[in-house]
Image (cartoon, rainbow, N blue to C red):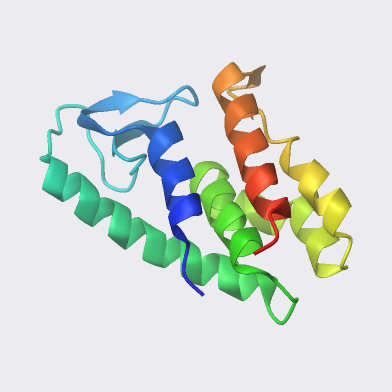
Length: 144
């Protein structure tokens, strides 16, 4: 399965595109649309490079989310919401999450609600993460 346009729009909206390396609220060096792998303090990229990094990262997260979901029935919107969530919190955190456990158990309403719990970075609740989680939960619940 691949992320749909709605999921991609959430990632692009909330990550933004920054072409010079910066530290995110969690203190991680970041560039482009939230890319973190191999980013150093003085790194600068082009818009095209940011798009390429996003495509690369999405392949990693799509594959990871697919593996974690296994055979659990999943809609395109649920999958896309989970790719956006895991893109932000990491596959390791997503693998241990209550939203994933509830989804696999078929408790979709609980799974949707559990998305909203991921609203902190560096131990602080952030308004941007609250908005992002609401968008992801709304996408998760959206019937095709």
